[in-house]
View: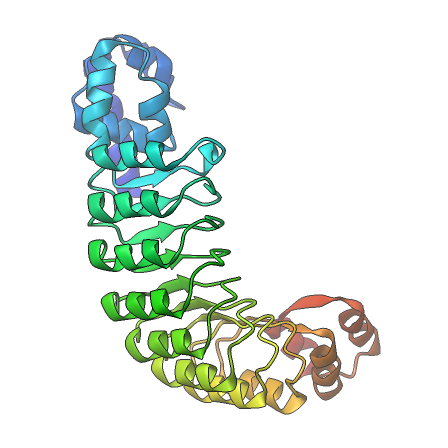
Length: 336
């Protein structure tokens, strides 16, 4: 916090020197348009300002009309950007827009394209070739992309640590296998609603991505116990795992998690109707850091019978279609 305050103070000092008036930069909040209208900014200072007042890309683009000097500085500053979030413009961002952006923003390490569902593989190919330092990419809801896009990322963005492919339902095992092979440093992977995936994809991730801490497999309903067992043995650092809608997994999978993933803090099992009370109790006993668990009505009833004496709370849990249970509260109330 002290470091941030010093940075803000230094920024105000430099801005006042650029603008020439201490009143142009108030102590609480920056009057951005007033500052930018007549100032001559070096690109590094402009980038610092952009990152201080909000979405840096938004400021650099939206204020370009203020002056030719600012426009030139903004172009230079875009080349220094590390983070970009485009979801605000999800209705208009297409392949051409993204290609133009990444041609200027070559230093990006984080890129958020959530719900930019007009983009296709071509846009991701541009990202892969233009943003080789990328460590985090969010493609949530980009439903047009295919394996071609993911494979391109594996060759161009080999530093990827976080990838969100939520609802990219054209993705197949081949893409995930390539990803796991090229990016063993992955820590966060979201494959929610990638319904074509099978055990082949999950086995590849489990065998190569030992640093994984978050894995979302919601509605990957072809996944079996074998895949979850592989995750349990290959990804001991997992703190978040969502298996909701993986309907064919059984106690075998959950018992494996209880044995191998001791760091689990959140586990999603909603819709896994074959899970019994024995498995639920085992995961709670072995995963000491577990804070929340989401499971479906049948499993709730079984677990509640084992854990509870409070009939009122049992009815509350049983009547909910899906309940996120705080395990610490459950322990306190049931004295388990």
